Image (tube, rainbow, N blue to C red; front, side):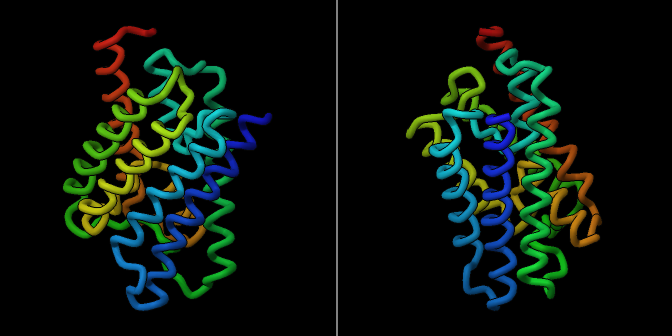
Length: 214
């Protein structure tokens, strides 16, 4: 229960601050900017890992939880509870943003700037490298400690900086699904469900091949 609540709060914070930065950027005519949005995502990931890493591992992402299980570092039986908590946290954050900014059409949802295939491939690659870093700096399925928070937050920031304007740099299925569901703008949300999951899975398989289950 404690781990699930930690995942719910952490994912709420991620979606609320990250997509909130996008909503505020739209409302203020670009005051936040892509750099500000990327920094917001990176900093909130860092903060939540430092806050909840020792409790739940601060996965905050269903693709990350799945990848840990594939790598043999997280029990499969715990996946449903983590996924439910992450989903509820993300949806609650989007509902909160809708209440605060009812004029927002997409609530910070991810929308491809180019072709669907371009965004799919980008999301796969971005999540693949993010998951490799997560595997490298975590202990088991625990992302905790200053190194883990700084490394993972920095990768999120870096990838959002250069890929955000093209594909949104979601790297997280629920981060994209929640604003799409609440706003009703589902569009090409399937890209952001499948691509991050594929990228994270590939990273987990490769990591397990490199180092074995342990």
